[in-house]
Image (tube, rainbow, N blue to C red; front, side, top):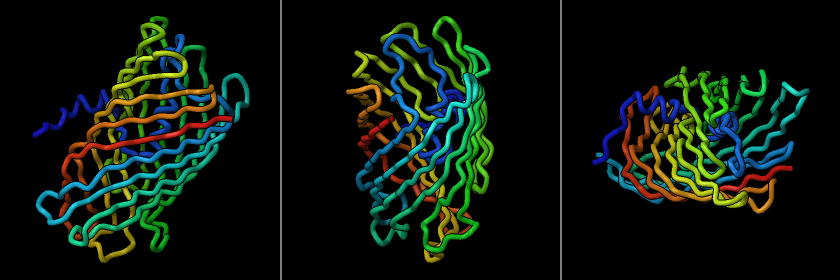
Length: 301
């Protein structure tokens, strides 16, 4: 049986980034790693599109008859507008579909949706430091009957500072308007790149170690924490909202055939998987650990 990591370690490693997986991409965008040699890893371009698919095969439920399989589809499109040498605005939006393939005895919704806008600003204080804020207002629900209760707005505020020795630190907070759990979340982390070939990241949402084999090929070992909350308008499921969360350990590779294109793939193991229910009579559920596969494509222009 795998033990849950201590709370303090989760703060340092994951920054307690428990916003939905799509907004969590922003935390990775805001990392301030030391950029040396190959150690960049982000696609170029004023416009950026991100697409991904993650699959978790069927796994048994604890204490409840039945099993659950999950497939996550994610899409985000954003544009960065540089007003001057210090201020960059971000505008865009995205969509996520969580498809749940479960047995009838599990009594879970089949499709959960996240449709959101993105608005943000990044201010470069000087060559070493930055401050930023991003908002993600949108509808997060089963889309059976949209209302104001389906509205949620994660807000991410971060600042960072880079040192000459390849160390960068990032700190801030997340506030999640409209969520039932963990509305205010502190975030803290750092990135260290001692040379052009290696980088260590202890920043939400994906701490890890990356080896830059070349400009085109990056290999990594990483962890991840996901937490997605949705309003449930179909009251036959016995709750007004539900949250799926898990921890992951993975290995993978990024391939950049051109500066504006990045293919990523990762395989790993998902554990401590939970489904929590709010404002209803249903008890929370635990799901067995499973291996998983994720593929993604980033394109810039």
